[in-house]
Amino acid sequence: MDIGAILLQLLEGFLVTLGIFAFTLVFSIPLGLLVAKGRMAKNIIVSSIFRFYISILRGTPLMLQLLLVYFGPFYLFQIKTGDIHLGPFDYRFIATIIGFSLNYAAYFAEIFRGGIQSMSKGQYEAAQVLGFTKSQTYFRIILPQVIKTVLPSVSNEVITLVKDTSLAQVLSVSEMFTEAKTLASANVSVIPYIAAGVFYYIMNGVIEMIMTRIEKSMSYYS
Amino acid sequence: MSDAILEMRNIKKSFGDLEVLKGIDLEVDRGEVVAIIGPSGGGKSTLLRCATTLEKIDSGKIVIAGDTLCDTPEERAVYADKKMLLEIRSKFGLVFQNFNLFPHFSVRRNITEALIHVHKKSREEADAICDELLAKMELSDKADYYPCNLSGGQQQRVSIARALAANPDIIFFDEPTSALDPELTKGVLSVIKALAQENMTMVIVTHEMSFARDVADRIVFMDGGVIVEEGPAYDLVTNPREERTKEFLAGY
Ligand SMILES: Nc1ncnc2c1ncn2[C@@H]1O[C@H](COP(=O)(O)OP(=O)(O)O)[C@@H](O)[C@H]1O
Ligand SMILES: [Mg+2]
Image (cartoon, rainbow over all chains, first blue to last red; front, side, top):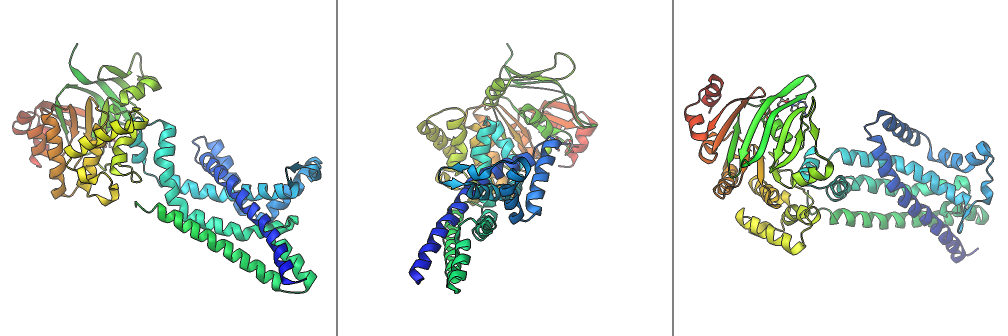
C-alpha cells in the first residue's frame, strides 16, 4: 500500500474520531450540568445518587465502561443490539457515544460544581432584590461567570478527550487508532502510527487554539 | 392613610436558637432618611435583609409602599405570593456593603439589565435612565467600564445607580462605606447626601456618626436585637438618653 492510500484510510478513521469527539461534547456537557445540579441538590437522597454516579464513573476505567455499555444490554437483557441503528450509526458507535458521554459528564459535573459553588452568595442576592427570576439569575448572572471560571479545566478535559477517543478501539469502532493498528500490521510499518500521531497532535493544536481564543474573549473582566 | 413607605411591626427572627430580632418596630415615612446605628452583631443587617426579602421573618408584619410583604395572622409569618413578591421587589432598592456588582457586565449593563429584562423597558429608555443616573453619580465617562477597573468608591456609586434605576420608593443601604478606604467614602457619602436633598426615602445602616447626624432625619440605635433608642438625628447623637447609647456613642 502506498502512503497516499494509508493516509486516505486514516483520514476516514479520523472522521470517526471527530464524530466521537463532537458527539461526546454535545451530550456530556449538558448532562454534566444536570449531574452537577443533582449533586448539589438539597435532598440528600438525590445528591447521594449523583455523588455515587460521579464516583463510579470517575473511579473505574473508561474502557470497562465502554464494554459494559456495549455488551450489557445483551448479557443482561438479551437485547439484540446488532439490530439497533440510528441513521448511519450502528450500536457499536452508539455505545461508544453513550459510554463516553456518561463518563465525561461525571468529570464535567465536578468541574461545573466547583464553578457554581465558587460564585458568591451576593451575586444571587443582588439579582434577587433587582427582581430577576430564578432562571434569569441562572442564565444571565450565574452561568456566564461560571463558564469563565471553568473554561481552563474544561479545556483540559477536552484535550484529554481527543486522546481518549482511541479507547473506542475496544469496541472495534473504526476510529483512527483502530485503523492505524490495522494498517500497521497489514503493511508491517510504523508509518500509520506516526501519521495517526500527527493527526492527533494537529487536532489538539487546533482545539487548544480555539479554547485559548474563547478564554481570551472572556478575559475582559477579572 | 399614613404616609409610611416602610412599616415593620413586631419583627421577630431567629437563626436556630439565636434570636437576632426580638420584636422590632420601624416605620419610615416618605422622604424620610433613617440611619440605623449600633454595635456589630446587633441585628442591623438582618433587619435590612428581612425588609428586602433576603431573609424570612418568623413573625411580624412588613408593608412596603402599601403592599403587604408578609403578615402574621396566627403564629408564623405568611408571605405574599410570588407575583406580589416581584411587585414588591420593584419598590425598593438595596445597596450592599461589598457592592455585589455583576463583574461580567459593563457599568451600563449592570444598571440597565433589570430595567430591560425585569421592568420591560426598551433599550433606549433604559440607556437614558442609565445616563442620567451616571451623571448624578459623576461617572458619566465610566459607562463602558467593567467593575474590576473601577475604584471601590466608584463601584459603590454604580451599585447605588443600579439600586435607583427602577425608581424605587425606598432604598436600603447596609454599611455602604465600610468596605472603602477612608478617602473613597467621601464621594459615596456625598452622593447619598444629594439623594437625601431630593427627598429620597432611605434607610442607612452606618458607622459614620457625623454623616448620620447631618444627613438623617432620625436615628435608630439597635443593640441585641432590639431598638434601644430612637429620635431626631441631632438630638440622639448630642443628647442620648439611654446608657447603652451613650456608651456606644462614646466610642466615636
Ligand atoms: N445567616 C445567619 N445564620 C446564623 N446567624 C446569623 C446569620 N446572619 C446573622 N447571624 C447572626 O445574627 C446576629 C446579628 O447579625 P447582623 O444582623 O449581621 O448584625 P449587624 O449587622 O448589626 O452587625 C449575629 O450574632 C450574627 O452572627
Ligand atoms: Mg451588618
